[in-house]
Figure 1 (cartoon, rainbow, N blue to C red):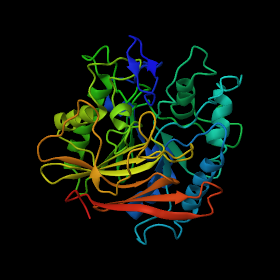
Figure 2 (figure 1 turned 180 degrees about the vertical axis):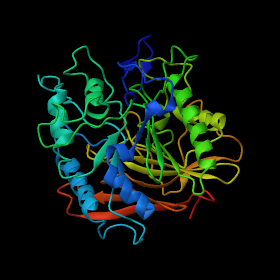
Figure 3 (figure 1 turned 135 degrees about the vertical axis):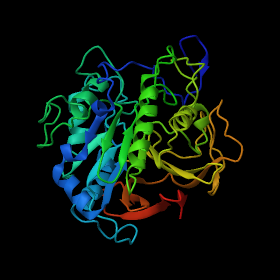
Length: 426
């Protein structure tokens, strides 16, 4: 057992990260300053999406690995193939198109856990070997939110993960960074670690859940400020107004590295923000904070995507009014080993269950009467990624697995179809 700052024993599966402020100030208060339009990042793809009236893209997290690069190369190779052609693996649906971009769900790179390795903190080498090399064949833009491994901070910029995330994804300048020693991929010019991507078919709101256990949006020592939470509420309310003026509303997708809900046996500890060195004893679970933002803004997202856990899960949140909201965990993008959903926090495993079954709620989280969060599908044995397609009133999601050994064996492990008008899974 570890001990936190006040000496309280901490379960071994709990993240040892202390909530840390971002090293750069946010943009001006205008929401536009937090927005990147796809047409400004890749004009040709934006035009192709608009002309087709449909969009396909990838999502995945937890891709980097310091020692074994084969699984992430396998996943990247299959995704790159789907950029060139939609392929034959997956749902047989004519609305699926060639993928237009990858949206990374965090934990792009990982340092070596061997403390005797003098170069284990070299972020430049990590970005080249764990990001630029695997994705050199992926001929589309790659956007990202920062995971807990991407958010760690040191005084030396050469070893500070958050500084290199900012350098490679929130660059103030166009062109290559010194971290890219492989190809001609330019740094992304995302406005901030929490930000909005506007595309012709959807809005994607990316949050930064920091490095504390369970995910924390804002400084737990200053609960009255809550800049990221206030930003989220303003964004949701603004998009609600925009969609009200559209004949065809654009779906709102929410991306956050730490999963708000999970069926994992250790989620009662790993989803609890009061555990760990931040000692955020008055902080509510991430799912509760997000639910408050949905209620305050009057706008729910159409789907929520996360990673952090190195496996795949699909959960459905059932609201009392009949609205069904998918929560997807896609963290098996290359960092091995793939985690077991049944691993306890410590030793032993819980009995395996067949879905559907209730999600594990973190302490302090209760659901309103008539509502439920249930695991409806999972895969805790394979590496893989999400392919999302949006066309008309349909959002189609596919979880595609690879063998992790070159990507030669691929299969469709799960799929779901969301009717955006009725907001029911069909």
